[in-house]
Length: 332
Image 1 (cartoon, one colour):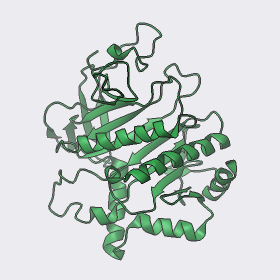
Image 2 (tube, helix red, strand yellow):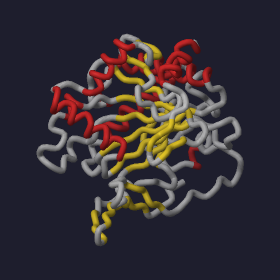
Image 3 (spheres, helix red, strand yellow):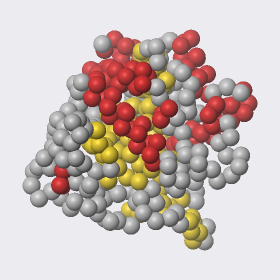
Image 4 (cartoon, helix red, strand yellow):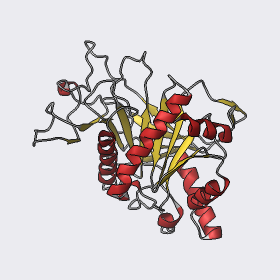
C-alpha cells in the first residue's frame, strides 16, 4: 500500500523561536481488525525500506525479524528539495525529510520487558543502520528515534517505533548542542562526561551502572521517574556504537523498562534516542567544530502518565529524582 501524500511544512514561532510541524492528511482506517504490522499482512504497509531476514527470504515477504516501512501519512517527505521561505517576519521550511516506522518484532503485543534480549539487540542494530543510511542524504540535518508504548486498551499494540529525519535541528537537540558547546568552550570537557562523574560521586540519583552505561534520574528531571541511559565511554554518534556496547545496551534498556513498569504498573513509557546531527549538512564553517568532543549520545525515558504540570513554562515534578532513583533501584 503506498504512503498517503500529505502537505507538510515547518513553521517557526517568532516569539519562542521553536519550530512547529504543520501537516495535512490522515491515513484511512483499516478495513478490518487485522494488524498491518503482523506477518502475512505486508501488503497493508508501503513497500519496506529495510529488513532483517533469515534464509534469504525476499523483500516484503512474511519471513522477517525486524522490518522498516515508510509512514503512511508521513510527517516529512523524502522527495524534493528543501525550500526556505520568509513571509514577512515569519519563516517556514518545506517538510523535506523522512518518516519511517520500525516494526520491531513479528509477535503482536510484544514488549521490551519480555522480548528476548537478542531481539532487542536486532532492533537497536536497525536503528544504527537507518541513522547511518539517512545521514547519507545531505538534506537531512538531524535524525530522532522515538518510541511510545501503548496501553492494554489501545487497538494497535504491535511493537513499533518511529524514525524522523528532519531538515532542521530538533528544538530539544538544538538546546542540548548549545549547552554542550558552551560547556566545552569554557572547560574543554564534555558536559555529559562531567555529569556522569558528578552523578557517580553523589550516587543518590544513580539507578544502575554497568561496564558500558550509567542509568540515572537527572538532577533537573522535568517529569516523575524521568530516566536517562548514557554510555560511560564518550561518543557523539549512536551509529558508532561497538557490538559489545549494543548487546549491553539491549540488556540495560530491558532492565530499565522492567524497573519503571514495576514502580508504575500499567503506565506506558515514552523514550527518545538523541544522537549528533548530520555533520555533512554544516551551514557555517564554525558550526559543530567541536561536536565530536562536546556532544554525547544518550537515551531519555519517561512514563507517559498524567499531563505534565507546568507553571509559566516551569515544569513541576512531584517526585524528586533522588526518591525516584531509590524506588527504581529497589524495584529489581
